[in-house]
Structure formats: structure tokens, C-alpha cells
Image (tube, rainbow, N blue to C red; front, side):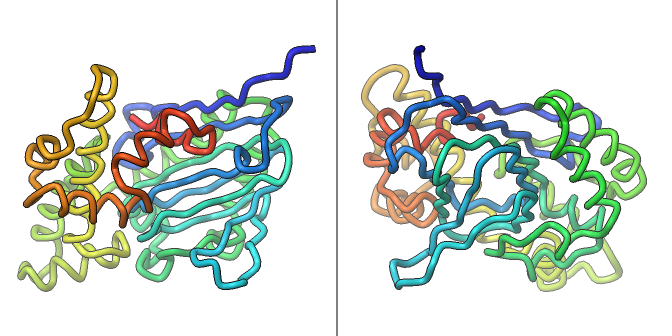
Length: 284
């Protein structure tokens, strides 16, 4: 019997939730023959929050540094906040999972959580979100397929988002666009409209400074440009860095390392050759 191939799917939210949900992701290695290093999953630093479901198999978060700290075994239903550094998870064996990615300001509006307290954390879902979210998550865990999971999540979120949606929230796909909208909302919100007060609001809503969010957006934009250039042949990193607004190629490389852990050229090769960099191949 021929071994199955690993699958990874990016699913867009409905338009009504596009200012709340960034994407859904399905991933399966069931039936696939993979080497141990191919069972790693490399993720960039991201301002997004999310819920992960592991319907089959196990997963663990590897320590940020090789300091002897043991891996953190992840719950079947896990919550994660924004991450300011790249992360690596591992599936010891065949696994199947599903992920909901939320814009952090939307999570704050829905739950009242201070997102700044959730940065670089991955926790058991029930330790962060209330019983209503927990009940929804249980139904998603036992759903028959990804399409059913999306339907269950959207049926839960839609009435809550219609009630909690903040003025000025608009559908966005890219971090750069979202950060710009967020800055305008922060300046227009509340009694105080100074830059310092706006920065405080942004930190509460997202867990990060506007400068950090703008940096993430610039790296993402450069990543999309690089992937388009890869389809047409060689990537001219100096030209790409200039187009993306970096002072020079070295500046771009430093920023790319902060977000991905790798130089742009090495990331390009890993995307093309390494199964464990699947998230970079599907991200749009």
C-alpha cells in the first residue's frame, strides 16, 4: 500500500468573521512515512492568538533555547497567545490537528482578556477561556472533519462577534493592513487620544507595541514578495529589502531572523525542501 502524503490546508473565514478570524488551518500526517525531523513544525513569530485541537496523536512545544528544559506536552485542546519569537513543535508520531487563528484585538473584545498577559504562552484551553468556549471546543474536537469544525466555530463566534465587534474593525488579511487600522482605532478610542494612551490600548489589545506589530507586518510583506519572486526564479534580496522599506539588506536579514529564526536565503531553501516548514508554504 502506498503511504499517504502529509496534508496542510489554509481555510479562510466567512466574510462576517474576517475582522475577527484570520484563518483556520488543518494538518494531518496520518498514514505518512516521515523521518523524525520531518515531524517537527516550524512557526514564525506571530501577533495572532489561537486554539489548537489535536484529534489524533500528540504534540509538544520544544524549548526556545537548548538549555535542558524538557518539551511542554500540549493538551488536546490548547490555547496560545501571540509569540514574539519563532517556535517549534513536535509530533512524536502520526498526528492530525486543527487550528483557529484569531486577531488578538478581536479576542480581547470577545473575552475581555488582557492579551499582554498571554504573550509567549501556550496553555490548556480551560485555564484561559471560560466554560462556553470550553463547550464549543469539545464539540469541535469530536467533529467529523474540518468543514464541520469551521461550521461549529463560526456558529459560536458569529453572534458573539456581532455583539462585541468594535467600531472600526474591518476585514484584513495582512498584518501591515491590520496594524494600520489598529493604530487609527487606538487613537480614536476612549477619552484620551495621546500617542502614549494609544500605545497602552494597543498593548492591552495585542500584547505588543505598535512598533513590533509594524515590524511583523513588514517582514510578512517581504515574505509574500519573496515567494512570488521564487516562483519566477532567483530572489534579489537587496532589491526586495528596499521595496519592503528596509534601510538595507542587513536590516532585512536581522528582522527576518527575529521572526523566523533563519536568514532569508536559508528560509527559502527550507521552504522548498523541508516538510517541517509546511506552514510557510500554505500561508497566504
